[in-house]
Length: 170
Figure (cartoon, rainbow, N blue to C red):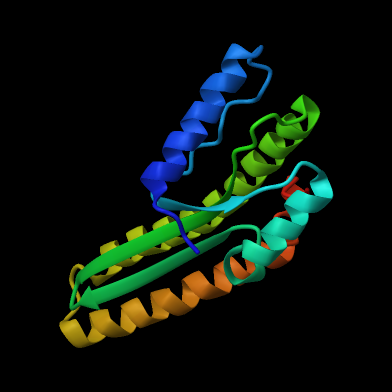
């Protein structure tokens, strides 16, 4: 259900430009760093409709999701990270609902950035550790890094209520 990011991003930029021309009262869009961004489209004109769309279309049953993978060969590692977020591009939205969705979207993106940051910190630390290791030891260290990232990410979700304590509630 993922759309190509270029097409969705273009519609998102058009929406932002229209909002800026209509008074610019929307907060700026949160920029997720160190990850590719994918979008899934939602539609609706009420909070209930938007929540239902995110529940139905969201990745793995969530409103957003950070998916990552590590592949290593001895001391070299390849990291991929994709954050999937909702995209709402209504024709004539209620300005209050548009602003409410933007605030939610930004808080959701900030929460997902936390997952990306856990990945980035863990991989950077592991890269330093494996520099002087033989390949067998480096492989064990990368496997340990995978487990560490998973544990920290699960704990992060537990502590934040999957972003609820950070305002990722719509």
